[in-house]
Image 1 (spheres, rainbow, N blue to C red):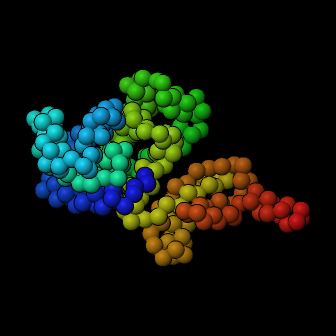
Image 2: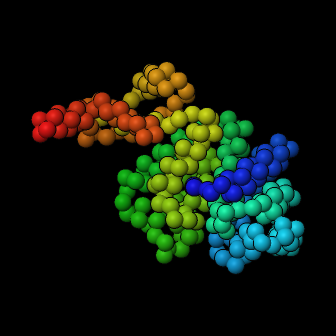
Image 3: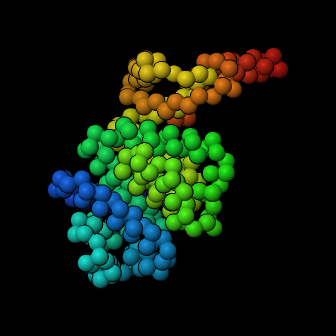
Length: 275
């Protein structure tokens, strides 16, 4: 998500209000409701261009924008949701699209906080990453879930048939929303972004590791400790098996690539010989 300066300031203010609301909410179910209602508003605004333009109109009095919001949603969403959205619509956003991006970001943060409080953030991150790998490995499934012309409810039912009862409630909510309203994102990339967001929530960087063979728990712990020491910050591993590497590891952290695979070394040798 890329936001311009005004929208970044607006989102920062909205996140502070969200933090106040979350701190006052001890019930996990209430946090789930807050996240789901914010996602519902994303869907509403995405489908009604005139409404999102009106709520993001910087030329209009903020009080008028808030009155429009309360007239539309008053009695239909919980009070905490209305508190957060009131701050959103009275702030200055760079564009209507970025206001919707901001509400979506707040919804995701709310659900990740719920997982964090329950001690399930690690599990949610891992489930999002693994589901992304599963879908990336099934071309027909990826096409079906990414088809902009397909019925959103049908796509949600399809993905739910894979994850229902197998993943955390937060994972399911995040995945259902992504599939229902990808908003220009591919499902696989969207799942990767969500997993990275969960890792960032834990103040960790993500190392995408491709290994020629399966790494056991002890090997993953040693690799994580080594990378944490090298980068002087916590590192989360996302590991996938890729036999095409023939041996070794290929590690990507941000824009940096550490290629210790046999295939990588052979490719480098060929480049040197050609060179």
